[in-house]
Length: 374
Ligand SMILES: NC(=O)c1ccc[n+]([C@@H]2O[C@H](COP(=O)([O-])OP(=O)(O)OC[C@H]3O[C@@H](n4cnc5c(N)ncnc54)[C@H](O)[C@@H]3O)[C@@H](O)[C@H]2O)c1
Image 1 (cartoon, rainbow, N blue to C red):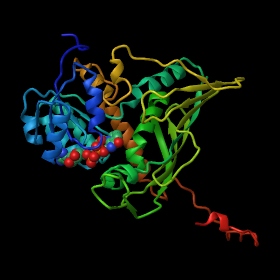
Image 2 (cartoon, rainbow, N blue to C red; image 1 turned 180 degrees about the horizontal axis):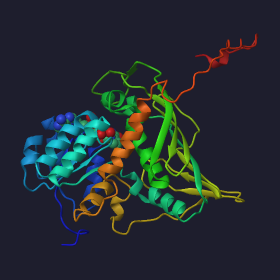
Image 3 (cartoon, rainbow, N blue to C red; image 1 turned 180 degrees about the vertical axis):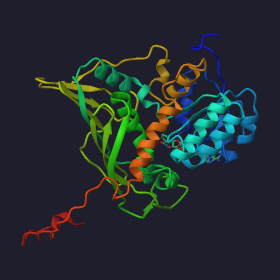
Image 4 (tube, rainbow, N blue to C red; image 1 turned 30 degrees about the vertical axis):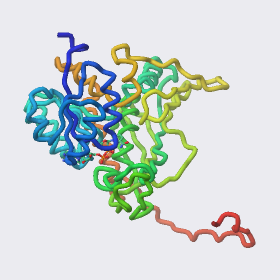
């Protein structure tokens, strides 16, 4: 049967915050029906199944034993990814995992080996670069619209997860942080546009050790911060291009762009790479104004599924025949390795000590800072 229409039933493990986005996205793709959901919290799985008319719900073991499920979508927190992916591959399922592919590159590497051993496909988010924005930007770069791309900037500008996620604990512990939580969108977008990364230098810090959760439907009141939540880096691409990056959960707000690519003939303004279909703008040498590029639309992805999570799962099942899918484990692994290297950078690794020091200049006297305090 044609890979573009073949029905491939999906089982989803994890019915937390991001589940509705997947349920909505996949509901627009008739060939990918969700036939079963599972969650550690059985009640949450049941409620999700009822809300989305999914015929079966239960434990992960039941999902993996269900012969109808051919593809498992693993959208549990990062620290649960590797073990569940391994179990699903060994149960004979193809697997698509939310980002990061695993909490560590080492775990991800083992998952990739298991996929090879079992002959099953393994793919991973982000799939945002498959959306209209990512593909429009890619078409512009490939067409030479900005000449030779020699540099980029990439800024994760804030997250405020503590203000909206009911339990943001995983975002502030191993496998989370701005580098591993948001970084994947940026690195995936950059690799899509500029090719692989070959070197990274940088440094990380954190602004607080604990945060108060203010999300209206919070399940926890406070979270301990055990990973660095502000990173700054220089990425060098195999092409020679350089990117300046700042990935932060600590910055409250900023006017920095999400992502820009600088070419010898102009600049490409790429929208938030955590979204699928915002406009891509270009300003070429001599232009006075930014011009919005016509969006590139994949004719094989149903319109309702283009701007929401799911294109990566569709990309995977379209390649069950054997060709390399785009949101592949190898792609997600490269993204994870870059980010893990950045997160684990030791100060002595590539950094040059400054030998001089200086006292911070005293402020001018007599300035009234009253209006600035509250
Ligand atoms: N929330 C978002 O906006 C968002 C956006 C993009 C990607 N993601 C990614 O999606 C994944 C899930 O994030 P979330 O925000 O939905 O998390 P969440 O904590 O809201 O939900 C995770 C769900 O997985 C379940 N779970 C945990 N361990 C499990 C296990 N071993 N077996 C079965 N179920 C288990 C939990 O009970 C929970 O219901 C993460 O990888 C995250 O990076 C989240």
